[in-house]
Image 1 (spheres, rainbow, N blue to C red):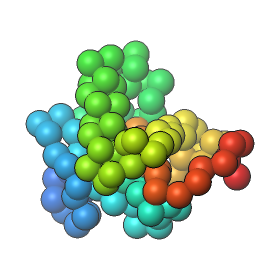
Image 2 (spheres, rainbow, N blue to C red):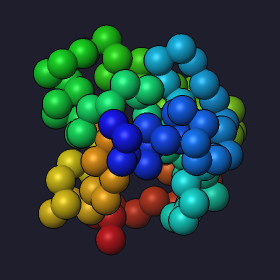
Image 3 (cartoon, helix red, strand yellow):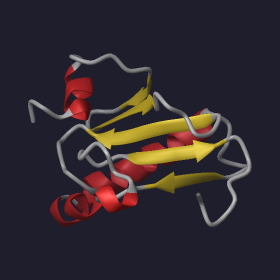
Amino acid sequence: MTDCLFCKIVSGEVPAKVVRETDRTLAFRDINPQAPTHVLVIPKDHHPNVGELAAADADLLAAVLREAHAVAEGDGVADSGYRVVFNTGSGAGQTVFHVHAHVLGGRGLNWPPG
């Protein structure tokens, strides 16, 4: 999609601090981190939200989750604990409508979240 910020990051039109990249996914640092580790993992293909991704391509959703774990390992938070969050819809705080997993860690993450 030409107006999607994350599609522009995938295409290289918009810069990002890339952490990991596969043929199907891209992981980059959040520009407004909420924890010492705050990385977004996205599929390179455009899907508006996690529900639509799950319905369209379960293998790609699994790849996003595998990469989320790889990010946690790479940032050294896999053993101490990390959170993976998908916001779906504006009422849940989704502001970019290209599915993305937030990988958060490196500090205490109390439940329920803010």
